[in-house]
Amino acid sequence: MAGLGDFENVVFDPRVPVYLQVVRHFKELIATGRLRSGEVIPSRRELAAMLNINPNTAQRAYKEMEEQKLIVTEGNKESRITTDEQVLRSVRSELIESEVEAFVRAVRKIDVPLEELIDLLQRKYKELAGG
Amino acid sequence: MIELIDVRKRYRLRQVLKGVSFTVRKGQITCLIGVNGSGKSTILKAIMRLVPIQEGQILIDGKGRSGADLYEKVAFIPDRLTMPPGMKLSDAIRFMQDYHRRWNEARSRELMAFFRLDASERIGNLSKGMAAKFNLVLGLAQETDYVLMDEPFAGIDMFSREQISKVFTSDLMEGRGVLLTTHEIGEMEPLLDRALFLRDGVIVRDIDCERLRDEMGKSVIDVMREVYAP
Image: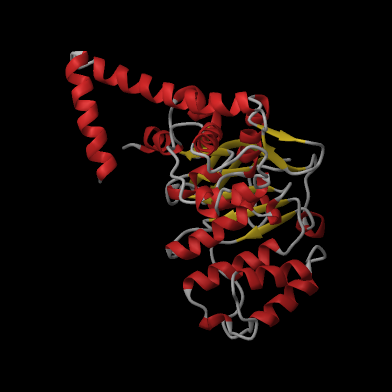
């Protein structure tokens, strides 16, 4: 179950469309299991209030998530996370892939050999996980 | 829709507005940005007919309005409380109730509770932040289609600002057209639908904030720097 804290203290990058950042935030909550299959999510207006964003932007984020089949809204009822396991699984892999891709792009600019990179990656991963 | 068409305003020899045109739509939060003294407040006062304009037109839902016809459509929240300091908050509310046909008593009570204001207090005893909140109560309890707010966040503490910004996402604003002015954007950037930049007496940029981020990868503050950099 997602707690209130999961929808507060989200820091927005002012140069990236807010609705995309909201969608991304939901994907993170889904990928980490904080939002579960079929779980009811806040109304558009509740979300806008919690995130301190424009209600039209919250509306747009929900529309985008409906189009991506991440959430379902039946008639005038509340919106829920999809129960389609395939969609839910793909959220996680999509997030990981896009982050890894961004990392590889950044690191390729400084020409690091793959072996060295893997060593470094393992060391850093442990370091950060420990901290 | 509020429409300004080529509005020109002169204070003695100084031409403050040199042909201002823009629209304010229902269901949107539009922010009018300009440095101090650029004429932002003058625009709001012109819409409320508190100052005369020399040329141009101001239409509200398709026609020029004044007096009760105007006050039923548009609420104006000036940059400071205009009620006398000796008055109790409850007296000020009663005054508004008598004066405004669109006054919603339940909504005013709701707002007083939301801001934790004590109706038996005197206006002169309010802190700056409290006065700003009470000022909002007086404006927002009017059930109008449009709300004009002059610098609602200026000179008040962070917690009051956060509380005030909650009003923008609440159902109090649902469906209404909001026009607010500011000289600094700060943390309200994600609240805005549109930003208008006033410089040298004209609107130099009229921006859909999400589209700006999407198409240009820029923030409203980036545009502010472009427009006002010396």
